[in-house]
Structure formats: structure tokens, C-alpha cells
Image 1 (cartoon, rainbow, N blue to C red):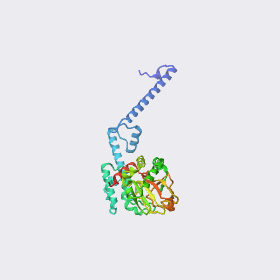
Image 2 (tube, rainbow, N blue to C red):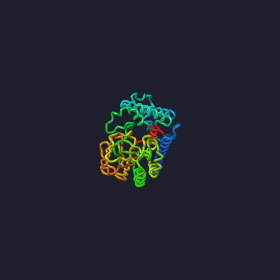
Image 3 (spheres, one colour):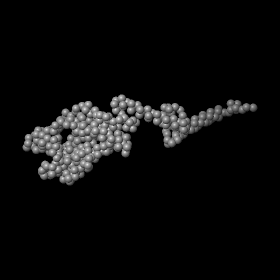
Image 4 (cartoon, rainbow, N blue to C red):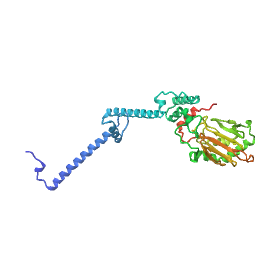
Length: 360
């Protein structure tokens, strides 16, 4: 005879207890199944380490449902196909615009035949740097070298004659915050720097004293660093200024784009319109001796120096310097220091140090 719970004459409270026990068992079963699912979804894939369930579900939604090593192989294939597709799309897109960031790695495109000898020399140096280190971070430099032949097509306001780094924000004058630390260091040592200039100025302005005459009459330069090379004799004459330069974080002292020194401009002299060699640097002018009627015009914007304070200038813009004061007013004197443009990355700075190695 078949017996069932319904045939037993159980009291009402016993029947309620049996129903509660059945519900509890179903709840525990569901919890166990959910726990097994979580453990299975968090198992590490072969050779990839632990993969979170959310990441795995995202991968499965993209590449289809798969299990075990087949899933791993298929996901790797998907990732490689996706990266290759992305690179090809980016390369095609750039080539349509006349340039390619990834050309050094993915193609053997020839350097423009009409490029100047200097541009070809720099490109060769960039290739040598990439062989020794890496192409990583060299996209803008590579693009700039390939487009150097089109520099003449740039606006007449900004036209560096040696190297133009693309996609760098440029304005004629930069705010102090762009290089606050270095500016504060220079301004804090203003009196020491001024005293050392006066000492070398009183010895006389001639080549034997370390001075170089440049440009129009009345313009002279006392170099501390010239094209990335320390002028040892002049630095020994100005030890405090030399030590101050070494404490600057962004001073360009390892390649031929960087210089530092005292610039002197006599009354009545004007430095005609010219362009700097590159937009990868800013020139920091510390005013030491500023007579009236001295003016600096960069990119059509006029500015005046102030004694003891710094100006940050992008000299790749068309610029003019003039001193229209009387002969009795004396020369205009600044300490000029070349600093890296704040938007030039560390990897790019290292590469340019290699490319623009000073001629010793």
C-alpha cells in the first residue's frame, strides 16, 4: 500500500512545519547552485591569472559563449583581431590626412624626398634612438619630421625654422604657472644674479672677457650655456648664477636647442623680426636692468620686462626687440634661459636630447 503525507492524520501545526521545511530546502538548493556558478565564473583562465566574472561576462558577450581553453583561445584571437583592426583603421585615417603616427612601426614609408638635409639627419637620429630604446611616445616627433617640408605653409606668425612639434598648444606668452618652480627660483636669486652680471660687465665688453657680439651694434651676449654646452670660463665667473641654473627642473642643458646667458641691448638698437628654431622650448627672460622704452613684441603682442621678474616667451613666433631709450639710460639687460615647453612629454625630451646632441 502506498502511503503519503496527505493520508496521515497530522495536526495542522505539523502540516505547516512540513511546508516551511520544504521551502527552506529549496532556498538552500538555490543558494548552493548560485555559489557553484560564482566559483565557476571566477576560475582563472589558463595563462591569464584570475579574471573577474564581470570581465568574463563582458568578453563572452562580445565573442560568444565559450568554455575552458576554447574560450581562452577565442578571446585571445578576438583581442588580437580587435587591436589589429584598430591599428589599421587609425593608420588609414592618418594616411588619409597625409600623416601616420604608426608608420615607423607598421610600414616602410620613405621619408619625403624633398625634405631638407637637416630634417633627414634628424630622422636618421630618431630611427637610431628608436632602435636603442623604443618607438613608444615618438608619434608626434615622427609626424613633425615628416611634415617639416610644409613649414613654409604655416602662418607667418609662428614658423620655427629647425623643428616644429605638432599638436603643441602655442601662445606668444605663457603664464607663470607653466613653470612656477623655475620662475620662483630665478626670481629668488635675482640680486645675486644681478651682482654677478655687474661684475663681468665692469670688466669690459670684449671677446677676451667672454662676451660675443651678435646682431646689430649694441647687442652682446655673455653665454653660460651655448647650444647645450657649458661655457666653463664664463660659468666660473658667475658661480651663483651657474648653480641656480642647475637647480632648475626644466632647463634645456643637454641638447643644442638650449642656451642661457646675459643678453645686452644698447640704446637705439632694434633686433629685427625673426623666428626661433623650435616650438619645443620657452625662453624665460629674467629682467635685470630695464630702462624705459624697452619693448618685446611676440606674435603681434607687446610686452615690457620688469626688473626682478620673469617672462615666458615662445620665440618660435615672429618677435621683435627694441630699446628706444636715450643713450644715458644704459643698456637693457636680461638673463635668458631656455626651458622645455610644458606640453613636451618626458619621452620626447629624451629623444630630442639624443637627436640634437651638442656639437662638442
